[in-house]
Image (cartoon, rainbow, N blue to C red; front, side, top):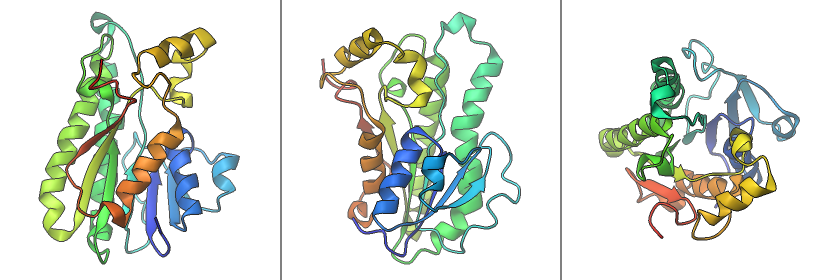
Length: 238
């Protein structure tokens, strides 16, 4: 994959999947623009053009400094709040929806004119979860929000196909990121999580970065409107 001369925006690049994707794309020659609330040393070392941005807030002028043409956008922010349904306040449902769905909506509305200008087409990658398609206890809030992300993916893919903007979604299972630290805090938890996957291991950020980079690349130019599972077989195999 060659990203030379391609302008790529990664939102939520400060850790986990976003940081792994930024690192991989940097090595592939992309001209990277990253947006997140913090700028960790690992991201700063890549020399990306960084934008201080809170995905839970209105975009405002934050993204005005982006180039006139974008070839790709990956929206990586996410949340994991697992608890029994009867103990989830409406405010938590709204917070998950705001970050995962409305955050993506705000970014894409701010970027769509730039994406439509990309010669040869552009690509958008959003993120869902295996729990949106496979029912899992205690996942009511995040599964609801991510199911909406999948609906948004298909709707935008249909709306913008004629102008060459592809929109796809990646659906991971439990992945070894800071977001999942509470679920993987002991060797026993890691072992139990691995056993839930047919491939008998926990997903790594790089697993998702490879898929994200593929979907942003020209190699996936005939793929749009898809939700692609990167879940170690969890969603389909027993």
